[in-house]
Image 1 (cartoon, chains in turn brown, yellow):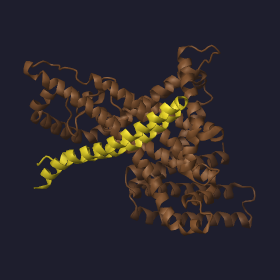
Image 2: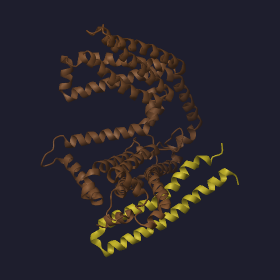
Image 3: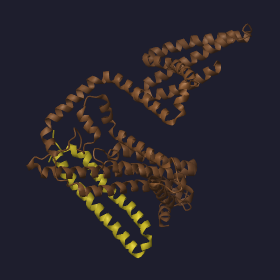
Length: 450
Length: 79
């Protein structure tokens, strides 16, 4: 405790306040984030000055001249601070300023509570077992979500009621045609119904269903990531020298991916980038195949997910360029490695071409994956609709499953597109890595020929 | 001819033209790869990998047309 505790509070609240200010600036208006941070800074500087004043007033040499000067400086600083604060109060939104001002106090309270909790017997019992700790975290997250959704529900209720009315009107209008077609969705091109759209139609007003419906692709992709993490955890938890079935499959997959990536990138760079590229392949494959499970949806049939994946690859390949080539080497690479006079003459031509080529990569990657998976879904929906309309004279609740042959095609394209995405990412990495000869495309073909 | 009719006529034709182009490209790629495998069967794996990459590049052009069609097709219907 004491002054060291105050220093820790200052550091923790500065970091947490920065994160909170950034969150508020993105979620709300940027000015609100600025106000939060200004309030935080105000409070911290105020605390700092008070601390200086108390130290100067209680130290043993408090009657000497330097201590008096320090105390006077602290008081003068507080007066100046109040002036600045008054100006801030007039300029920025007061409520966010107040929230920022109370932020360090919240940190102090939390830190004091944690000082009480951490040595207690309860805490030692909970953290003694991994499962009990996970259960506690899950409980806390669930409670926080319930609190937030019940607080947000009141403000969203009007909005939700409006949305429900609109959905009801749309359903009433398009009911005839959609009942014929068998599968229906409110807006946009039709897709197969999945768990979330079914929930959304059953409970259109509930805030948590609206949340799920809004972030449908993200929810599914997070779910898949969770499943894959669980699978990896289970497969590597207890490794045996004679592997069981699960460990066998995972080891086979990792070995294949290792051979594949090392075959393209070479033994020096291959193992370094294998974790990223292998994860990319497994994740995209799982996401593509997920849509073939009834009442599930491929997250990759939404452009948002594929753009995110392609942007990750883009940023990472630029980072590799900077790391492996250096800043000078990176720009040298972008200028087409000019070594001769002709090369330097061609720089104004080569630089835009290379820059545009770099920018075109994420666009083509994301559009290819999205188009293939989305198109595959559309094909299945079209043939399922055809099957229902074929039997429409009999007024049956089902149709002929014309889409079954195309499910095998979908299996093929799902695997192929995951492979293509990974191969192209690997080649983009390869083009960024240092080469022996200064012709990237020739190097790529060279590496493949071996 | 108004905008909607032009779009309704043009989109399927555009998809068809894109499909013809990438069909020709894929045919050439498959032709070359099969001949290469026939001449050197032991290099099948590597040739197939390269074939798949180039086929994906050729196929992507049709996919772009397809995505464009899906982006524009809601505009065909007159309100």
